[in-house]
Image 1 (cartoon, rainbow, N blue to C red):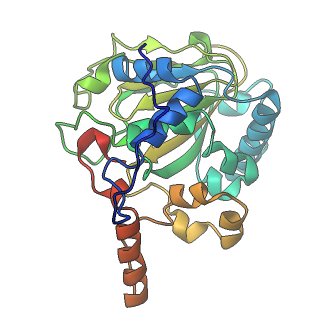
Image 2 (cartoon, helix red, strand yellow):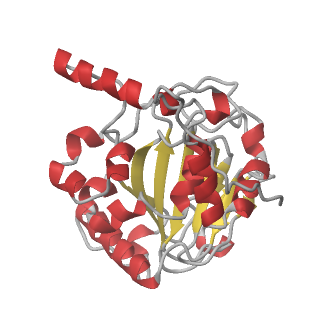
Length: 306
């Protein structure tokens, strides 16, 4: 891949101090190159998904898995046995609101230093987190049909991503373990699957525990049934463009203590600076100020929307 020489970084403000509309694009390029993610960007463009191996350390896997199983047990009303998985035979448990309930391990996850640059590449620096959800799958016939995550948007879908997902594998992903399936290149179809589309074309996405699978919101995907004993543990961090309504209402459920202990980027991701939704003239003036300050992020078109 050709490397662009950016030793002479262009000035990002004009003589009057206003930021250019191209502001932030150089930052995205820098973060991609600094993390050696050029190949991952190529995969996202051509196949609609990419795999980052060793995205999580052994300690992070353990902490996240413990947190997920604890919350799953609370929701189910009885302990979840990760050994034989009998508590989840023929079903997949969805554990929601992990960012609000899981504490620091999940807060750090949405700021992942390698996955977040790819999400920013797909959705722009103004993107927000839509939901953080866990999935616990036991042995049995439960499978997930082929679908697209871009919901509530009429076909044809735009070619650029409006949502993007990161699936973190807390256990090994193999076909017998009930792994994710994807139809490569389906993000370019620009419509959701209809009438069983993609069922034959979907391929198993196998990856070791600790890997992260990043995919475009248009990409058709599903999941295989689990044939092995035990449980498949997955975390999904779903991001969206800032003009879309998130699945989880973080402004209402996250306290100031959570915002205070995290960097400013975390506040942006949970929608603290989304330029809509004022409830008073004071709030409206604050948001107008945000719009002026962040014009380079907000006022773009199509795939280059920051």
